[in-house]
Length: 342
Image 1 (tube, helix red, strand yellow):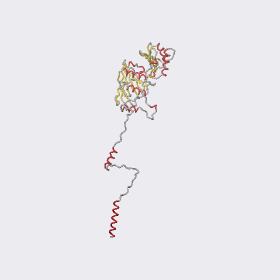
Image 2: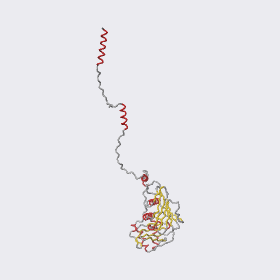
Image 3: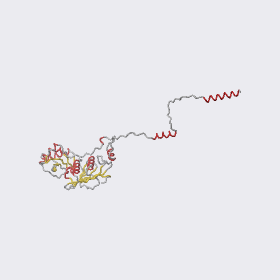
């Protein structure tokens, strides 16, 4: 009986334990976590798709910079910009054309009832003419020439004057002398002007632009040979063969404006126009049939004429020679050829 009671008590305890409710414990999380309702495989796929979706690109705005027309022009533009370390004196400036006589300089000046357009003083020893521009000198020279017929004197050291008018040109070749007579006074004035003014090559200053009928030219342009910035960054050939009136006038006025040094080299022989020695060659043909042949160098030019037994080598600045190539390349009839094929 005692054993049965013990068994009955044990069963009661077990029954009470099974029917008891556990306490609910509230858990507070400092950082709440968002749980997904997707299965782990689906959740992983969604996160992967999120990572691969690119962010929207910002709205593009039009550029304020206009692109260059082509790469050659861009390269040429960049090559013309001085480096940061380059001094302003080293910056190459655009080519400047030598200026023809200013018509205002001779306004109101008359010789033999014709308007004067230019007056030059002769220095035969240096084969040069000097353009007279001082009004005092001009007004002193013209009245004396009015009473003196043009004179031709075969002398290696002759002085004198060359006068251009609207009707032609007149030349006086005088011996070096002093005195109170017109020849002596003019000789003295000429020697003074030869020291005062810039020199121009004798036969270039002497030519009349209106008598030029043809120009032929072949040479090299581009870096190292010209001063103007051209589209090509490489050297190129320049070829001209023209009788265009505008181009002829441009060439004539440019050549007349070139300045040269004293003491040129006189060569007792005419120029061979086919000589390969020069960096450029030029041929000028006139109405009279006379032909000038010019061979060009980096800082000089050699001039010969079909009616001369000598040719003259002048010192001429590299800047002017480069500007001359630019002038020739810029003529409307000029041909620019790649790879120096000319």
